[in-house]
Image (cartoon, rainbow, N blue to C red; front, side, top):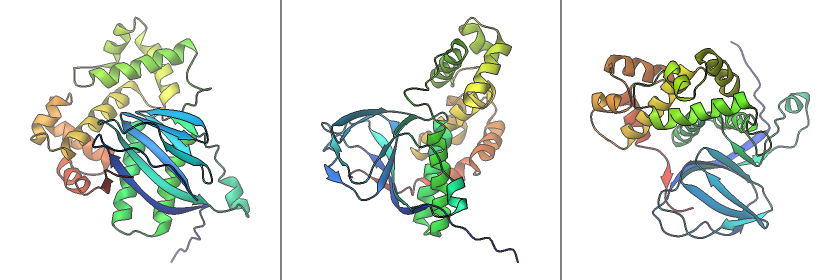
Length: 273
């Protein structure tokens, strides 16, 4: 039997999914732990030690222990965000030294779909009372995504990277249409091969992969919200071949559409912090 010693430099507390009812506001408090927040929808307005943050969809915020934070105004009715509390264990070994990640307080996540998938996996494992080491591993993967995100100083500024970002925005609004890499290039008045290269350099995936991920991400939301039959959801997300949709969905999420719907209707959801 192979035995591996697992020693992660973090300590999990708890996590959840907040869905606003359009009432109340984030409480003012000082925590003894870090809080990682990721916005899926809407804008979270929050202040930490006189520093105001307006965190939008696709962005993360790390609140620090010992600092006073509180909401700015009431929760907007469309707000939806994931949260996770954790602590740091003081580094004292070569292994922990090697695991150091530069975590920015504010970041724009490069691949929000992957980030949400990891958060949902964390909540599922938490609900199933999995070992702490499993939750800690998922948190490390989340923090790695934050470390690899865009900060205010690293958001793409070069022409090629800005072009890739525009392509990503088009995918976000046109994924339900017969969208292709060449079609995106035509809309942006550029060469398709060039767009493909700068997009992969920026987002570490091809244009086709990005289109698929965006379509499957929307399908996930519709399945959980029970927005109709699977065949109808597939077509509304841009898939004409339902069998292909099922195969791709399973490849990207590890579950069939029906399995996904059954599992994530049980998410750890709260509407009050």
